[in-house]
Length: 251
Image 1: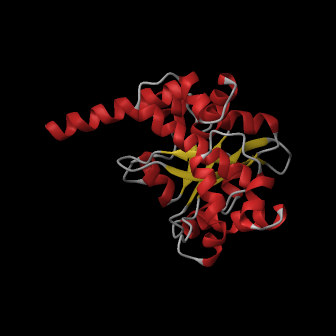
Image 2 (image 1 turned 30 degrees about the vertical axis):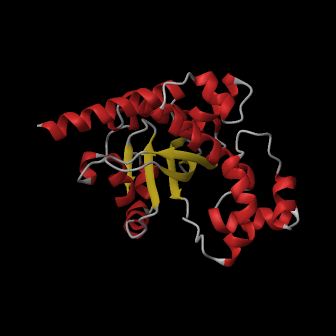
């Protein structure tokens, strides 16, 4: 651990964020090794003790392309110096269902300006109250979004259906889902794409077209940005995970 990282109140932050089950917190050194993690991130790795995580990289903790892609993302954040702000991502906890979060990362610098590592958080998205008045006001527009996500939907059209201005619609969606309308559309489309990758043998191009992407390459880029895996890697990883689970249950 570098002097710069040792000078940070990471122990205080870690202890505080251990009490936040919906926020994953981490600090890494310049070798991209975890220096500090909270309990929520520990659960995501499937490990029992923080000592099993600290000192290791994401590539060592998450098998296959997932770990390598997270490490590559970390390297880009440190190289750019501009950080990552509210990146919509999906993840699969060990033995759990896919979750969605917003991830932010920032490079860390020592007092003399030298790069010292990076820190970040991933905040789980809230589950909206579907019986609440705010949700009911958007119900028709949200129903269109869920049924027609493959169409070229526009925020202006959805806001008109809800009887709101675009600004009002955007603020209401943000309060309900913790996302902008554009992010909500991406989440809906890629969530549907994930289901098709796992439940069908359709090719990636066909899935992209069904989910509103005319450009196969654009779909793959956005899917990888959100899942840290390409669609093909995602399908393979989930199939291998399911096969391991069946083998464990059979023993």
